[in-house]
Length: 361
Image (cartoon, rainbow, N blue to C red; front, top):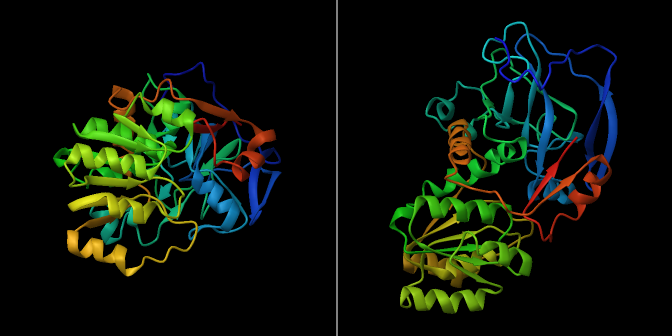
C-alpha cells in the first residue's frame, strides 16, 4: 500500500546500524546506550519514534521499579511514530504510516482477550516494561507469530504529540466509562497533572456535573480554570465547596489522580452515599487504611473501582475523542525533552508546572 504521507519518507534497516536508547539498568540507573538496529521478523513492525510521552509511571519505575518491569529495559509506553519497516507477512500496515502504539501486546486467545478485555490478558507483555519501549529512535513491535493489533493509524488532523496522549487518555476512559458519570452532580479530582487533566476533560465530555480540582501548584490550578468549574489548593477548601454544592451529601464520583499517599483516604471521605471512587494508579508508598476509612466504605455503600492500563478498544476511542475535539488538549502547557534531558526529567518529574512531558528523539 502506498503511503498517503510521502513527505514523511521511508527507511530501510541494515545490519550493523546502531541507535540510541534510554535504558533503565536498575533502580535510579538510567543510561543512554547504543544498541544494534532491530531487524523485523516476518510478523514484526519497526516504528520510527517521533514522540514518546513521559509520565509518572516512568518516574516510579526509575525510583522503585514496577510490578511488570524487567531490567534492563528501554522505558517509554506512550508512543507515536511512523512505520519504518514491516515483516514479510505484514498486510495491515505500510511503510510511512503514522501510528499511535497501544503498548499492551496481548495474546488474543485467553478468556479476557476474547471478551474484549485484552488489557487484562493472562499473558500480557507491555512495551516499556516486559519488552523495550519508546525512549529510542526506533521501537520494535513484535508479532509473536501473528500480525500485531496494537498500531492505530493517526488521524490526519492530529500531530504526534497529541496522538501520543491516546494511551493515557485511554487509561482514563477505561475507568471513567465504568463510573456512570452521567448520574453525577459533583465530581472531585485530586491532582491537576496529566491524569487529572485528562480525567477532567473526559468528565466534561461524559457528564454535566460540577468538576472540582484539588491541586497545590498555582500554575496548574490556573490552567485548570479552562476545564473545570472550581479549583482549590487543599482538600479542606475543596471539602467546604463540595458540602455547599451537594448540600452536605458529598460527591458521587471522586478520582485520586496524584501521588499523595493520603489521596485515596481523602477521596473515600469525600464520596457521597453510594458514591464511586475511581483508582487509576498504583501507590508509591505503603498506605495502611484504618478501620475508620474502611467503615466509610461499608456504611456509605461506596464502590471502589480500579483500572490498570487500557484495552485496544479504549485506545481507538481515545484517538477518536482527540481527533473530533471532544477532548481538547490544545493550549495546555507542555515540555519537550531530548536525549540530554531525559534522565534528569524522569528523576525529577514531580512536581512540575507544565502538564504534559514529551520525549522527542
